[in-house]
Amino acid sequence: MSILESGSAARAIDVDRALATVSTMVRQDTRTETPQESSVVLWVRDRMDELGLDTHLVPAGGDRVNAVGIWRGSGGGPSLMFNGHVDTNPVTEGWTRDPWGGDVDGGYIYGLGVSNMKAGCAAYLEAIRALREGGWQPSGDVVLTFVVGELQNGVGTRAVLDAGYRADHFVNCEPTDLTALTTHAGAVMFRIELIGSTRHMSKREESADALAAATRLLPLINEMSFSGAADRDAQVTNRAHIGSLRAGLGRQLLQTRPPQVADVAELQGSARFGPGQNAETVLSELREVTSRVCVHGITGTVEELTDGGPTLDQPFHADRDSLVVRTVNDAYGLLRGRTQPTGAIQPYCYYGSDASLLQHVGGMPGIVCGPGGKYNTMPDERVSVEDYLDAIRLYAMTTARLCG
Image: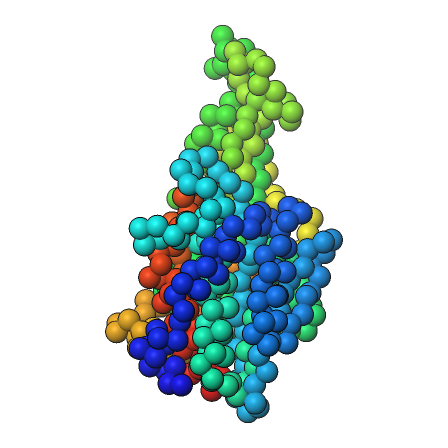
């Protein structure tokens, strides 16, 4: 089977079955940290069993489990790991379709988590199915990982790595609209508290208005970039955002006396930074910007926000000349007849992903490339059928070229 040619890759795909796979995955409600989160993991494990892979369930804490399937190579070739998460965000307002319908309509597949990132997970499962059924045999091992808890600092991928699973290269299939993401940001969550002095509105000239100071601070932070970036791609990842602002009386932020000037304000946000930068220097620069509004009786503090669990705030970076990046680039060129966009591609470079764990904890070189992205994490979330099917072809071609 000449899977290296895009036409052969296309013929190897059973389109109806491929669409049924992603629709079935979407129809399972796997919202993160819910009792049913691991349901699709068990379903995928059964599919890998049917394909004859060496399958394993890896505990991820509590009742959560990951699935790992290994296609053993004949020996002598590089190994490749595919990685993706099956947990989804909550449902938001504004949906006009059933979030768990898995509908295929008008050239799109609809559903909660289809972009982030069940289409990517389904694509590498179907890619390996196409290769196996086409009679191709790898030299190096191909490792499929389907994890939970990516939204909790990657607890699923951490568990897979802690269990010892590794490969020579990885492809993380987070949504990038099939661009090759070689740099994405690290992240730090933060909380800012501003303290002032209250007065009744009749004497507000005597007050130190914490709410007014907070409204001056918000645009300053949202416009920030940070020092120390290793290169242009690293600088591109820089962004800070305030997502929550509350103010009122006392640290309880009481809002029952609107005639009084707010003496406490709390802002919470997230900052993104790239290679060459780190959480400590970012927090230091946030403190410097906060100090600009700490005048006329206002004081302020900036602290990192954590949930008490493990964190990894380091950015992801891949060498554009590495074997896995060049292999994905070449496969994309054969498939679509044009150069694959590669680098710190916006907006995907602002995302976090388990690629950071795979690189910094797992010690593996890799790339982030997956279907979806344009309609990611929004009402009527969807992925184009064309991109999903091309992702299957891309992963099949990448596997054949790298592990053959």
